[in-house]
Length: 138
Image (cartoon, rainbow, N blue to C red; front, side, top):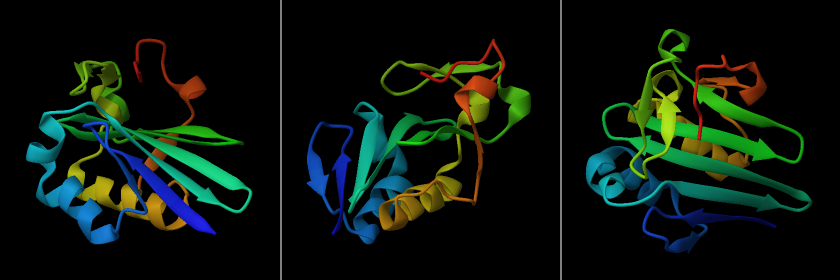
């Protein structure tokens, strides 16, 4: 049986969050919802499979994602030319600007993860080992 757990920026846990509510948090209420808290995580469970989508936010650049399951770890990549520019997330983690995805594109990443537990093919992903030395991702 499939289920999800959304660990919100305020620390609340929402089991099996519905797509419409998550859309409101991600796109419609982006600035208000994400400005006051920490990052977030979504855990996906189905039969013998589990995966995690870790979410970091910068209100100027959007969402940073770290996807992992038992086999792989991947990080969102939006602009390789800005990989050495560093900024902070709302919870003061240093992350490369080039790893942040604008909210409207980020929505597809979150939606795919909630529905399928997979990394969306709508954006580019990069293995952390393939990032340049001057980049930051946590």
